[in-house]
Image 1 (cartoon, one colour):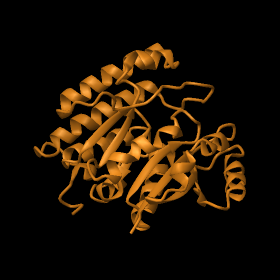
Image 2: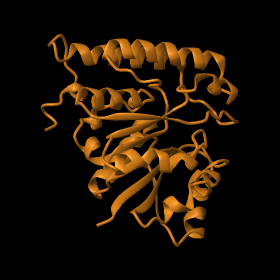
Image 3: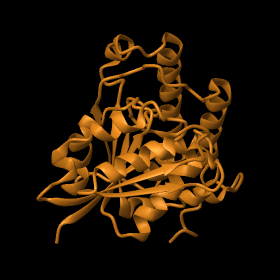
Length: 259
């Protein structure tokens, strides 16, 4: 039986980019002899024509299985991911790739992202911009983000005992069984969702691989409050070390109850 791959596109006010992102997905991924592919686009109540552009692409490519959904209210970056991962679990997918509708991460690297998952040697794959850190600057990453990303990653590695080159990439692929095994419904609905899920995977012994990807910063709009984000991800990292020791409780780090 062929494995099932979900390409999950989170989209918010991405009308200028969404069709280009979808059009850049390699044809060999969309139509493979080794796995069946579905595209899921979840619009997070955009205020522009993102939903209409996604629907237009779906109608143009009726040879593909494309599902377009729209949240009845804005759920936030993390909340929108919960919708997609729930869909992946409930529909029996083997792997899911997270794509951003604004084009910041290259769809051309999907084959490299999914290979470790479908081969069974990883539970999660991260597309890291900082394996080749100087390339991130050449790709337009602002200096303050370049420095801040590395400082936060170093602190998180220290707290969590991990050795990741970048905690803050949004280009991720997950094995769906790994997602089903962690309490991600309790994670943040904000941008620190990505940190929550990595902590959960690390805490439960999941295998995480990183691959180098190019950095691209264009005209997309960043909606992340840097100070708030930094505080939240460090707080979550510290919480995850204190919960097992009984100093506090948070259900997102309660792995026993999720079994």
